[in-house]
Length: 91
Length: 242
Image (tube, rainbow over all chains, first blue to last red):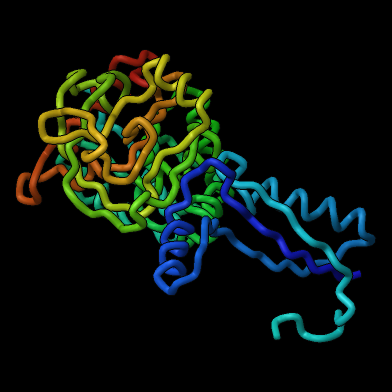
């Protein structure tokens, strides 16, 4: 069956994030009282796997092999069965 | 007399410094072979260069896609066997992604792309690339990058520093390593490192862009020309070149 995974790739805490700091500065200049912003990446994956366990294992592999570099990043994800599998995914 | 060093210059989709290396080949006495990333062997190369650019558009992370190119297992084997490897700029980023060199190159701390002449302090003038320089001298090479902030965890930095593997540091014109002279926020002002064995050099600056006086400097020539003498001093490499 078809699965959807939303993978969040985050800079490790403690690592300077100049992009996040710049965004925080932009928000402050608009009057928002923001303490901190951390920028990251959102990746939306669609793929086939036999069951949830296989889908979880596949995402874990994709993250550790390519999607995140453990020296600087962490990855976590939300996995769901794609109920609209017959519809084109790139809407 | 031995022949010129044969140097495999890798070309990924988006590489831009490959032609610069080919352009200076005559000046440094190399026979350059451009090797496409989809090739699986390096032929009879004496050395391998991973040039600068934006391999695969730098998508996901710099070097992240390039490190899985078909040619990379051959590069890893060549490096592991002690063959001389030079990764400049994007090539350095690819080497770190591949785990051939430790650490990672992050977005410059000021978020700007920085293209400028940069003084560098030579910290260890040894190996196939820096052997003709002098430890402690200041050289000038161009930098041209948006992601050059060297980072590794504290244990890796300690290991690099204590074993003399930080070979180039960003400095000012007098050779002083100061925060103001650091163009990207690299930890310890690191501009270049070598692997444990010393045969693989990764650096953010571009030696191939400092090979003609007309463009502003020739310190890069001294790095690229050093390869020949180093190869001659290696018995196995010298035998291959007779």
